Length: 201
Figure 1: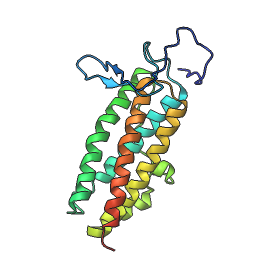
Figure 2 (figure 1 turned 180 degrees about the vertical axis):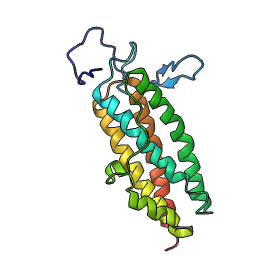
Figure 3 (figure 1 turned 180 degrees about the horizontal axis):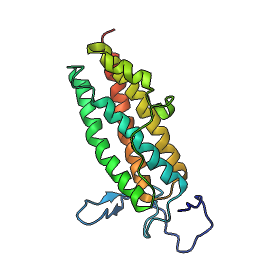
């Protein structure tokens, strides 16, 4: 499948962008609650063909999320700190369904779902294999410090991926996913930074 670059010249029947202060509710599918349209969002017609940025976002975010789940899976056996355990639970609850949604979207557009994840050199905040090995070897306050430090960086990488998608993507479902990732993980970063300040040295 060939993905056209965003910004093509087709302008026929272009829907109006949302403007003004009054909220506009947009149906989000049968049985699902309506959502509030974001300022500048164009509604009234189906999403155009996905751009390459939409595909890159899903293909990159799935393994990125999988590593976050690997990290959260280490928490229960290595710390009893309530805040860290809550962060792990919240991240897992949010990211598992996001992986499923992005996997279904990729299949629908004829792209294979990435398998596993690459630790690599830490791109987009990903932990390296050495960093993951160190995380597995720590316990207590040392684990809390390492987990929060790595997860903050990991989330910052996700924000960068979301910004790139919103700058060049055009599939509304992937743009909505990017907005959700950006909003949710921005809040978690702020909370994890506060928690990190309270970890004993």
